Length: 213
Image (cartoon, rainbow, N blue to C red; front, side):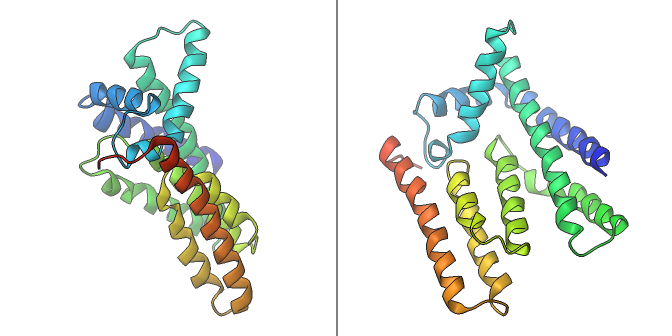
């Protein structure tokens, strides 16, 4: 099942970058990368710096090790990160499905996800936060179904610099626990989750200031 997840990641990750990034938008991706890293990008991209800074750090390490410092290798760095993340995401998705289904139905669920995934990338440019966001959503869902409430605010806190839509984990948490938990418990962890969201959200706007959208 893990090998299947890795295989799917190689297929979807490679074609994502071949179709949407490397061929039509390579120059734009490189410009966007340096705009964000230098703090010059527009909203909301500038408020989602984490995937760009991670890619930049990995790229600099590769250059120090002897890899050529050019735009193609920067693009390849993003491709490599996406391949790793999507492999992890497909494994996490299989673990999520196995909560309710046998291995065969879980693999069918993964196949369905892989099949519909391109629909989410129609008229796509370059959003390196998306595979990271999927990772955090899956970790959050696994925390919810395993009743690891303390992990939810932490996942939200870490994920905000990648993409602020991680806050949508909170209504998922409330819906999942509405009939099985007390109002007090739900309220406490909802407040913690909102605080975990607000701190990095406000910090990013203080760091980068107001940006035109």
